[in-house]
Structures are given as structure tokens and as C-alpha cells.
Image (cartoon, rainbow, N blue to C red):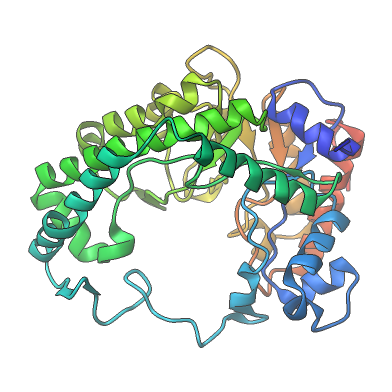
Length: 384
């Protein structure tokens, strides 16, 4: 498929090549009526045809590439926020957490469940995983090719997710924050065993992912997502992560990095202590900075990867500060700041994360105007 100018610019950016403009990453707006308006569709059409309307919206706002394609995700929202029908989970207010018939009501219950259910399953999965499974490689490639056909020539599809980037995670999503992190503090040897067993499987999975990148000639970038910090810093003490998590994370990611895939990390919260450590593990870029939480954009953009090359940076206007609470001038100022302090190659603009319903409309229109300016005019300062 012959790519359009925007999609080609995205591919050149992801290959760390010079471009005439700054490419735009997907604008994941969550307000259904705004998606319809910007798509040029009738009210109510998004719920009837979420994929079609969402893609029309992305094309109309000038999106150059999408990695995480979740067109139905905004359906969980009404124009005032999450729908009241949304269920409660381990990290969203569930009153009772039960897994495999076990009540998770203490750190000891977390450990018991891991040892009884999680560890045997991981051991079996790693032992039976076939890194020579060419059908699995072809399946990953076929999925990307089919999505690219759906997108058409105007938007580049970039690999994303567990098929392409697998690594050990903190299991608060299963056990809840309180009991999981109490177990993490009280039973570090159990936590390290979990990370080690996860990495045994993840390393094998990433061999398949790396083969898909090479054989399918896919855009050589994958974004890895896992929330590991809040506004104060990492959810677990950084020194404990040095001992328990980082060595297994690095081992899991090695097949991708050895294959020449540029792995970038999604940043929620204040991850400054993790940034140099992630680079040491072979990562070479970052996305989604919460500047107001202490993420030092200028300092990060001045860093180099393990090869001494510039980092890839997917920057964005802040969805928690500037867009909802700032002014039009604040949006203009922030976009100029991101461009002027970003790397010479590998810079992407967008939003720092999803844009919630009710976000200041004038600011969003200013954002889209600014993205178009830098996409078409290059890096010259934007006056708005």
C-alpha cells in the first residue's frame, strides 16, 4: 500500500530519520459527541459505528499513526464521565476480591494464590512455549496488515501490546493495591520469583514478536505500558525494583532490542528515578509525560540511549493540567516548549494521555490547530 504524506512522515519519524514536519500521534478523545462532530457525523452515529466514526475522526484531525487501536474505548464514557454501569474491579473500588475461589483479603492470601495458581501456570506456559512457531509469527504480521488495510493509506499502523512487548508486571490489578503492596514489602523473595517466572515466559514471547517485526518489515517501534508511579514517585521503592524487577525486565526485553526494535515507555506519574534505569535496560524513548508531577522534559530530551543516540520522544499537551484548566495561550506556549526542547529527530506530538469528557473545548481546538501547524510547517515557533 502506498502511504500518504502524513503516514510516510510517521514512518520516517519512527525510523529516527529527519522529516519536514512533526508528526501527530492519535488524539484519543473520550467525549462521544466531540468525536462525532470532528468526524463530521450525525449525533448518535458513534455508538452505531464506533470503528468507522473513530477512524474518520482520526483522519480529520490529521493523525499520522496509531499504535493502540481502541475505537470502542470511549463508549465507556458518557459526556460527563464514566457511565454509572461500569463495574468495580480490584483497583476501582471492589468490596471483595476473589480469585480461583480464594478470597484475597491479606498479603498472605496474595502469596498463597501466587504459589498455588500463578506460579505453576507460568512454569507450564514457559516450558511449553515454542519460539520456533512460525504460525505465531505470521499471525502477528497478519493482524498488523489487516489493521493497516482498515486504516487505509492515511494513517500508519504501529505494533502495540502484549503480542509485541511482554514484560513482568506488578500484580496490583489482580489483587488490589493494599494487599499486593503489603505482600511486595513483606515477601520480596516471592515477588522476585514472580518476576523471574514472568520473564521466563516473556522472553520467549518476545522472540516471536521480534521475528514478526523483522519478517513483516513492521515499523520498528513498540510502546510498553504499565503504570508504576503516582505523582510522588514509583509505587514501589526504587531500590527494591533494582533488586527484584529491573534484571528480569531487561532479560525479557532483550530479544526485541537485539532485533533493532526501539522500545519506548509510557509515563504516568513521576517516573524520573526509573528513566535512566529503563535506558540502561535498552529502552530508547518515552511517551506521555506528566510535567506537573515532576517529569523533567528538558532533562529527558537531553539524554541518550545506550548507543549514544537521541531518545525518541512522543510528547503531548498535558491532559491533566493544560488542556482542562489552562488557557488558549497556555496550549500555544506548551506546544512551542515541547517542540523547542524536543530531540532533533524522533519527536512526535499529541496529548499526554486520553482526553476526558468536559475538557475545555477552545483548548482542544487550539491543540488541533497547533498539531496541524507543526505537522505542515515544521519546527518554526507557532504564534497561534
